[in-house]
Length: 287
Image (cartoon, rainbow, N blue to C red):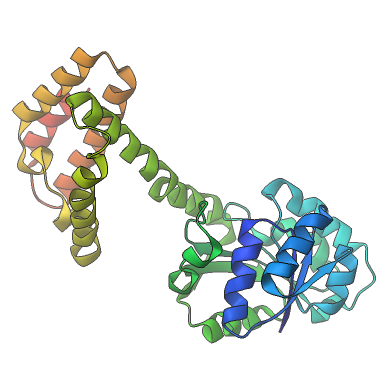
């Protein structure tokens, strides 16, 4: 399978570099910014294409790795080219959007899909994304959809075919698990700093707690991994926490604490850690 990328951002570079390491034939990159395409081509020892049409003509798997807002217009532009679309697969890598953004290409006979690794790309170097460990989801339509499954098998990935109507919820979950997790950590760090933990010692303070918590979740799941006052039904400690946050005058901290606290009460009930009466008392404290 010959792969070409339309869009030359960090995702395209990371995916191209990773697939090359797996022996995939990467043709190169096309971008509105020719400098970006040339830079990516140099970094991956591939080619910079002068137009999407030139790339699409040679590629059998066309990866659209533009911003989400540009996917539809790129697809419609491609659909205007006279190519043997029934022989081609066109995928985008948006986590939030389904393959229906590519319907203009499906109408031409192309196999279309959305293809997404459940991993955070962040700003680390392309060698640091650990794509070999990523879980992939995909969905789409067309006679060559099985080729995408074969491709994932070739790469050695675990994957799941996802309902296109649930892609937004899937991406919302990814956002909560990654983006909002970072925000939650930042909020906790702000509280620690206010409590007297120095910036110099912050990561040493955090690391064992976060690593052990995550280790427990991976080993046993959230229900068994949960600890803390709510899992024990300790309403007095919750009261003290709330009083402390009120004293600080940070309504944003208080709102986060209450929202997370209510969700934790629900988890504790689900896990059989506390009875309904204890849960009701905790809910009242967290109103």
